[in-house]
Every structure is written in structure tokens, then in C-alpha cells.
Image (cartoon, rainbow, N blue to C red; front, side):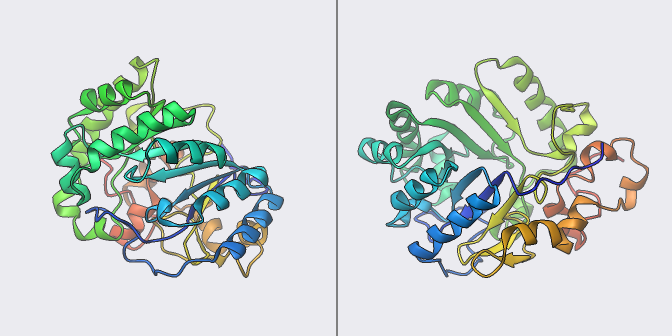
Length: 332
């Protein structure tokens, strides 16, 4: 399928800050600068992004709720026409905050939960009591009328617990369960030998996850890893093949730097100084990501047209070239 370049990214994943009340062992943003755009500048940039044709913005960090002006920023984004969502660890969301988030215009909020076992989650996140508060956040958000999802980064301690994670999501009314592939960025790179799975383990995990995805009619199980194409999982309605980064979405760091995604450190512009549409259409890095050259085993793989080499961020982090095969790939 030939790739059609949209006039602007559909979604921007926007890190409002890098400060966080947790110390997660796979965090990608702890190595980033602490610089943050001030509120007026951020709102002006959001306005320009909306005019450029961006339809949705997903706020992250760090922990975005640590920004004192998060509600004001979200309201501005919603009024500008964005579908507004957020990723949070949930620790600061009680009933009152859930109501304020609803009033601020949030359509969906994802809560990060890495295990159905409280102690396992709390140790990994470096915050005692965080599991209880994350589950409570899901309940508060549902009560406020905000759609919720659970984001789980698959690691060595949770890859065999899909039934338990599905049960947890159902019990707390989440509409979606996102299984994220492990990225070797930031602390994820430092702790990859302990936390990342082997290619064979990834294959087994995705086989199980695909079965659950097909059988769950009440819960959307999302798998964001292109390499599942080699297991026969193809979405003929998908707008793009391979990774969506740089094709459907962009990432903006807390200081305004634009990157293809949060896990690819290549800075291709700055939202304060540069025209977003010009960056989108003229960036050489984005062009290379949209037109990858298969290398190694990818050059002869029958599934390459579907997965396009897998996760570009992981290949770049581990091999220095995003055209190389995804290190998670189990195909010989």
C-alpha cells in the first residue's frame, strides 16, 4: 500500500513537563531537560497547531497533573477544537479532581498500571500505595463521565498475566487496555537486560494477546507493535503500515522540541519557532521514516510490507539505524 501523507498529524503527543512524583524503572523522560514552555506560550502553540489541522492532543510528561495550569491548558485545547486526552499515573486524581478534569474538556484519560498485583506495581513505579490510587482514579474518572483506558508496558514481570490484567480492566470500567511494547529509551535502556523480553517471549506474548483481543467483545485490547504482522495480524483498514510515528502523529517535548515520537530523540524542529506544517512536510527525518529501506533479514522477509521493520525507535536505540530489523523480531 502506498503511503498517503496527511496534511498535518492527526494527533500530537505533548509532554507538558518532565517532573514526576514517581520513579518508574522504564521511564524515557527522566533523561530529558526540565525546561517547560510557560502557559501563554503553550496556549499560543496549541492554537497554531489546531489551525494547522491537528485534530487531537494527548498530554503527558512526566506527570502532567503536576503542572498547576493543566486544567487551563486543557480547556484552551478543547475550545480550540482538539479532542483532548491525557496519560497519568493516577496518583493525584480523586473525585473532585475527576470532576474538574471533565469540566476542563478531557474526553479520555489513560492510567498507567503495570501489574494487577499492588506490590509489584508499587515497587516498579517507586511509589507505595500507587496501585490502590490508580484503580481509584479509574473509578473516579468513570463516575465523572470520562472514558478511561489502562496503559501497561509489557515487561518480564507481567507478560504472562494477560487474564489478570483483563479482569482488572473490566472490574474498573476501562474501555481500553493498551499493551505497549518495551522501548529501550531513557531508563528503559539502562534496565533493559532485566525488564525486556527475548524475541521468543515476545512471540508467545503476542500470540496470547491476539487471542484475547479477538475474544474480548467488551474491552478494546490495543497492541501498538508492528511486528505482530508476522503472526498474521493485519488491519486492512489501517491508514498506514508499520509504525504510526511521523505518519499519523508527532511528539512535542516539554521545551517545545518536535520529534517523530517520544522514543526517537531526533529533534526535527521546535513548536515555538517553526511552522508545524512545514516540519511535517519537509523534515528529512520524517521522510526517511515514511520511506524506510529494509536491511538485514527485513530485505527478504515476506511480512516487511506490513510491519516495515517493526518499531523504528527500538531499532534506532539498539542498532543506531532505524532501517535495521526490530531487535524484538522473532522471524529468523
